[in-house]
Image 1: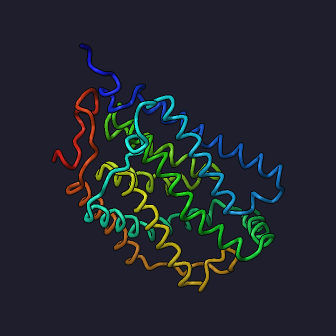
Image 2: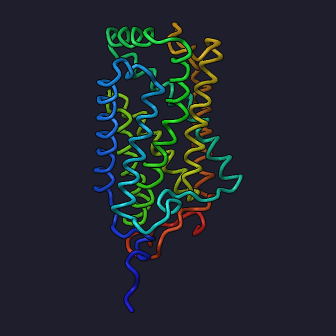
Length: 293
């Protein structure tokens, strides 16, 4: 009896390689942009509401996830497609610490890019848009963008796309393909921020593949934004994005220590993580997870 082709692909009926991952990333961006345009036409001004944008972003991710499941893994459970697996406490802690440590250096890089890449006129337009909504709406928007939209990112990029590409081409290809897709989608409004999202995407893909679970990547991403909110609140005593004044500059020594902490956590995850369970066929057979080391 011939081998079950679905099982040979780790319950993926059709291969999901790097090119397919790029196309699905583009489809996600298109779906989100289209929904924003439609909702803005129906309800003018909704594109200035961060909570609405985060919900539309999440809806776009869910639509694309359903399409990926239908095309590539119609017989697989969502747990398999998304890589939802239990994570040991140590791995979960290391993932969260990695994200938290990365917050300061990535934030400093983002601030440095923003000073050069965002024109004064554009910053003024953004401030006017924020001022057009009330304070509670602004704060709700910040929380939604920082703690709801990232979950959508993880489910599609470190969830379904990592699962598919890792099975088809191996872990290295999965990190590269999903990091590029995530970075281009996240910086679509201004590609000057591409370096920030390339670094973040690589760290989050590493968390997923080192532990074998998208839950670790979600924890790392939320921990990163948790530190951002804490720094913002400490500087301004609020998280209202309309508050004027720059966040105090972080000392170089603190930035270096934070970056070193993120790298150390990443190395410990690589060494002690559970690893991504891959079928022992094709290109993925040569990729070793934490459980193989």
